[in-house]
Amino acid sequence: MSNTSKDAKKPSEPLRGNAQQPNAASNGTPPTQKPGPNAATANAPPPEDHAVSLRELVARANAGDRDAILHLRRFLDLNPQIWQRAADIALDAEASWIELIAGTDRLVDESVRRQLAAMKDELAGPHPTRLERLLVQQITTTWLATTQADMQAASTTSVSLEQAGFRLKKAESAQKRHLNAMKLLATVRTLCGKGLAPLNPPKLYVSDQTG
View (tube, rainbow, N blue to C red):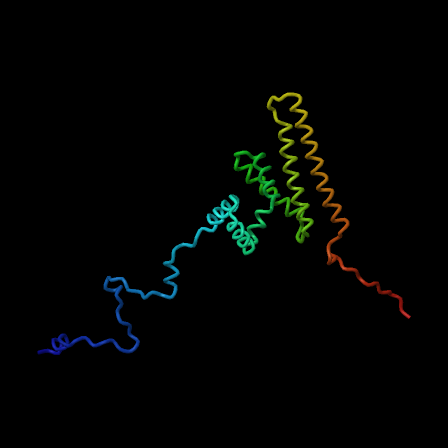
């Protein structure tokens, strides 16, 4: 018998050295993976919807549930960003004025919001104080009120003389409030200067005379 036939009858030897054993994927069978340390986390149920829980907690507290009130206080102590946003009534007033101006027009709504953001950045400057931020917020809110009052006064809808006079007085009142807010910010900045660190620190005078 030839050597070729003898070699064909020999059993295949195991691979040695750095040769890799064929995996199951080469046979068309998907490989079986061992569960990793994060498998339990990946298969865990999604976290609880905190927004829904908060609404339910607030509803119970509004109904007079003492336990819910205490729990709500602890929750707000642990999450100050929530009560800080809820207490920012100026933003609610701002949103109400935008709704009156834009109505259901989303283009006007988004444009006014961007205009407000640009105004706040320009008026506040790079390092505003807490007082300056409050005054800037008041300026932008009164600007919205003035804009809405002017639009209403300039409306072409037919109204009585009494209603037209009321709209003009409303516009004048809004303009005065807006001007007073801007004047107050200018006064505060004039009196308070540039803050604790002056923009241009003072320099010592050194005489050029010798001898």
